[in-house]
Image (cartoon, rainbow, N blue to C red; front, side, top):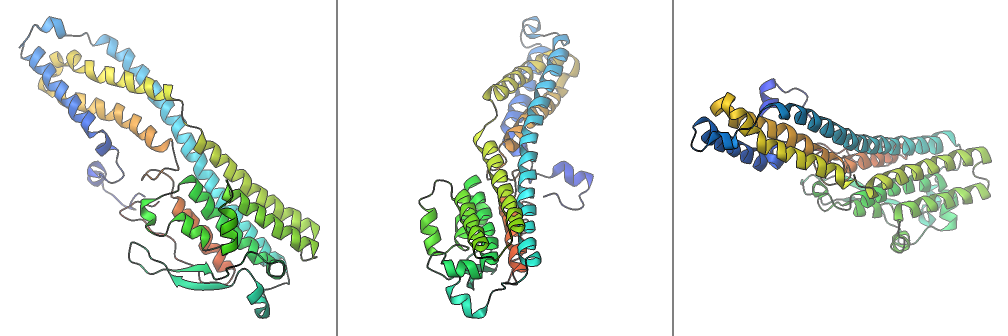
Amino acid sequence: VKQQSMSFLQLFVEMRGSIVPAILPHIFASASLGVIACMIIHERMFDEHAFKISLGPFTALGVAISLFLGFHNNASYNRWWEARILWGNQIIVTRDITRFLLGTISGDVTNVDDIETSNISPTIHESNVESGENKKLFVMNSSKGMSKKGCVFNWKENIVRLCIAQTHAFRHQMRPNCKMDGTNTALCDRNRFLSKGDQAYLGKCKNPANSILLMAAKVLGEAHTYGKIDTYSMIHVQNQLDSLCNIQTACERIHNTSMPLAYSLLVNRTSVLYVVLIPFAIAGLAGWWTPVFTATVAYTFFGLDQLAKEIQEPFRDRPMCLALSAMSRVVEADCLEAMGLTAPDYLKPQNTILM
């Protein structure tokens, strides 16, 4: 997360979120090659004609590498941006379902007398967060699975609750572990919105997030069977559940399909070749400025290559990857607030990083 206002000098020396630490060894190695080239050619410690290279071919090679890097970075950014759009749609669809069910569909508001048979009896507990902040989070206190009576009486709240659980389960399948989550993992967040029976059922499923959508569809079907929702409204909610399934499937496609290794090999090998040879081409002209120019070239080429590697897998636990935990918290807070329950605060950046 970029700070609101940073001066030119601050941007120049800022290291948080930078790729410099990852490529620093490459930069030092390139600068060292520049020193060696100066000692050989500029100071004539050895036969300079044996090492001196014409600068002409490097112009064409530099253009070719720039094209390779541009293509590699565009492909990586497209994967990152598509994943971000999909998770944005996840927030939009869950908000739409919540607003439609709790705002548009009238009647059947949860009755206090039926809460003991319901699957959404809320209690509040203090979560153990590594940051030390006490945040009140929703947690279910029902040890049983979804009863038919509770399903019918509180069907709207159950669908919203399952949408929250599906979001956390989806996040867990994309990123099982996140350092910034601490002990409040995605799996713990998912289980807070599920009964013990539901958790046991999902433990047998290969795709828990998809199974939660099936559970929500069954609740919707029961409500329609008992006349709690008309056919047209039922179809609308089912289409929204279909949208959640489409979003999950698209993200799974990105998650399970890596960038072709040939792109990385081509860019990496040509960049290394260029950086190794360029000092011997410019040492005669640049003199002892050669290490500086070589380090700059290395920073540009290796930096762009490393940046592409950082963002091409948008679901990893890396600072430049997507803030899945923060977006899941947005879904949870908005849905709980719509249900009239205590909503947790949105997650805030830690050292300009939000995961």
